[in-house]
Length: 331
Image (cartoon, rainbow, N blue to C red; front, side, top):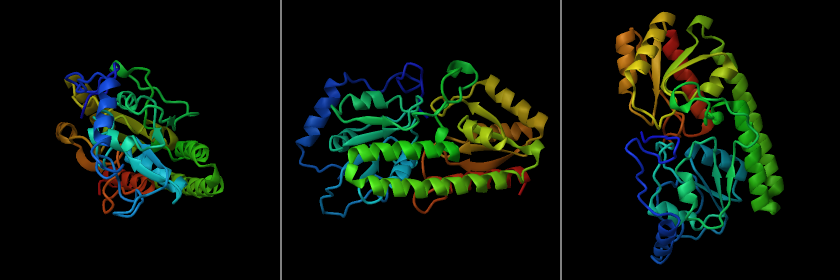
C-alpha cells in the first residue's frame, strides 16, 4: 500500500504526483471538459447505487466522497435527492490513493466533497487544488481523535473513527448538515433519513456489544495488520495489536513483527487477521511463527462489491465481528 507520510507525499518511494498543482490539475480539468464527456460517464470511483439512468442526464446535485464507506453513509442520508459517488473505487486503498484525470473530470461537476479528515486523505489536498470553489466538508468535525501510539505516527490522530458505531452517528449528523446547506428544500428528508440511519447504528452498537461480550476476556485481543480498530477496541473492551499504524505504511520492520509475535505467544491469541486492501502475507508469517492461525480478512477502508461480505457499513461491521468471533473461538 502507498505510504501515508507526515509530509503528505503519499508513497514510500516519494511522491507519485510529479505535477505542479494547481496549474496542472486545472489543465487536466480543462482538457477533459473539452472531450465532450459528461460528469460521471467515466472515471475511477463510481460505486453501485450512485443514481441516474444510463443514457439519461441526472439533474440532481452531485456530491463526491473520498471513500466508498463515506459514500454509503451519505446515500443513507441523501435518499434520492442527491447523487452521491465515491472518488475511490470499491476495494481501493484510500490512504495513498492517486487521483486520475477522470476523477478530476467528475469532480468538476460536483457541488460538494465529503472527506473523513484526521489525516486519512493526504492526497486530497492536491486533488482539491484542481476543483476551484467546490467546497469540501470534514465529517469527523466534533470528534475527539484517539492518538496513534508509537513510531513515526506518535500522537497523530487515528483516522478510522467510522469504525465506532457511536462515532458514526457524528458523521451522519455532519452529512445531514452539509446536505441541508446544499439543498435546503430537502431538509425534512435529510432529517428523517438521518434519524432512521442513526437508529440503525444504535441497534448495531447493541448487537456488536452483545456479540463481542461472548468472547472470553482473556482472548479479547484483536491482532491485525493495520491499527484501524482503535475506536472499536475502546468501545467494546478489546486489546488492539497491529503490524503498522496505518495501511499507508505497510512495510513491516523486524522489530514490529517480533513485538506482535511475542504478544500473540504471551496472550495465547488463537488467531490473527488482516485487512482486505493490503497483502496478508506478513500477518501469515506472524501466525506461522507464533503458533496462531490466520483467522481471515476484515474490511475497513473500503466496502466490498455488492455481492461481497461488506456491501455497506452495517454489514461491514457485522462481517468483521463475525470473522473475529470465529477466529478467537477457534472455529
